[in-house]
Image (cartoon, rainbow, N blue to C red; front, side, top):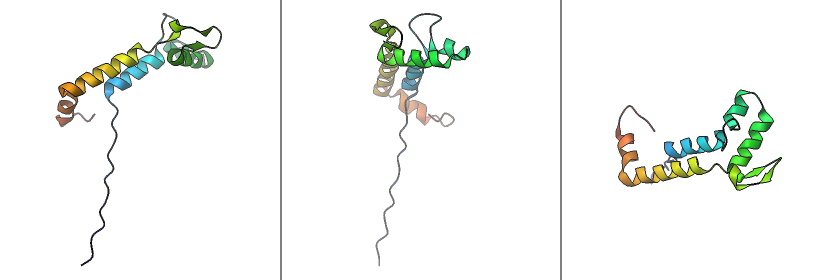
Length: 103
């Protein structure tokens, strides 16, 4: 009798919610009120919004050069910390066990 071919299962990589929220906070936020990426998007200033996204992640502002005050990485770092803490405590496993919430 011939052997059956084994099928490989594809595992889905899930992105933790806390890290996703932190990334959104980093990209859409800013360090000074009125100069946040979300403000520029609401005014349809797409070039300024792109400049702000690059400045939030890298610290380089197209018109003002490199400066550490342009970094906005704290939401991303906080989201990663919350995600690591939740996985250590088993919160993610408990949330995925609830039948009506699919994370």
